[in-house]
Length: 130
Image 1 (cartoon, rainbow, N blue to C red):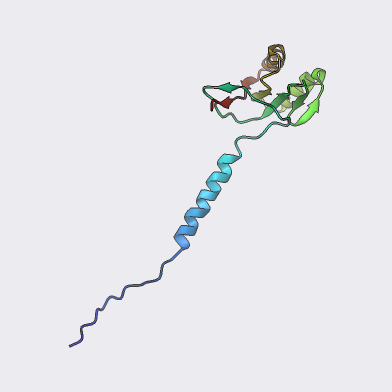
Image 2 (image 1 turned 180 degrees about the vertical axis):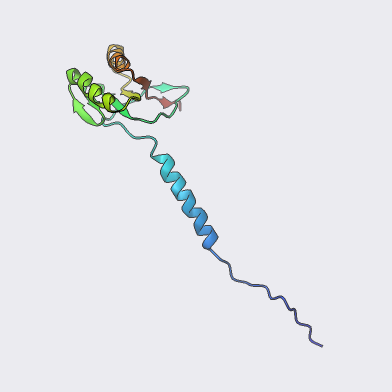
């Protein structure tokens, strides 16, 4: 007497749900990685204990050989105020300072003062301690 089961077990495996998960993870990592944009000039940032991520609307970079850049556009020291005025008239917000750690503090204070006088929130970019 041969007994046969009425319910047969399906041995195939559907990968469609796995590809959906992979696709969602890919979208998540693409969106979160675009929050940090590098500055236009190579700058050796100082270290700090806390390093908050801020949406960068306007960036000002100063290298150790005192080259200035506003949003990846190289400018002279005298042109920084005009560039910041033009950019901050369009949108009020954050000015992120990417200043090399070997630059004298007087340049940090000067650029920060210009941005603060234009009613911008000034943030200094740092890297976390290693």
